[in-house]
Figure 1: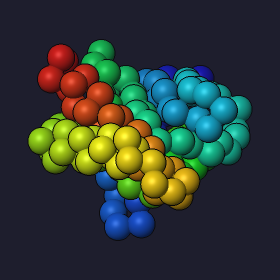
Figure 2: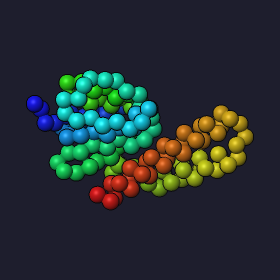
Figure 3: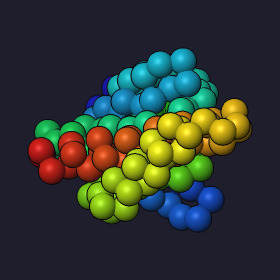
Figure 4: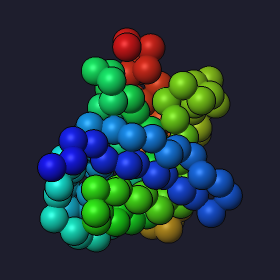
Length: 137
């Protein structure tokens, strides 16, 4: 029985992470899900949020902006539209993006603009939350 998972997080631009981990928690479209070694194979859609993983007694966070998770043979492959490790997040930039999104949502000119602003706000808030976890660790 294997006691570890391989976690790979890939975006269209790069390999963000490739590590051996003990546990992965991900923001599934239908709700958060967790993966331990020897998990059954499955494919899940991801929503904007924070993925976390445990390795060496430490919990680490990665912001993901949608995508898919493929779990099979003790490997978790995350194919994300974008992803950032918590320690790489530019907190000031995320705060400014959050403020801009809140301003656009307050204006509510068109439904399309509101939906875009809402998605931008969710991304900014998730980035800030991931960065906050990193500072607390």
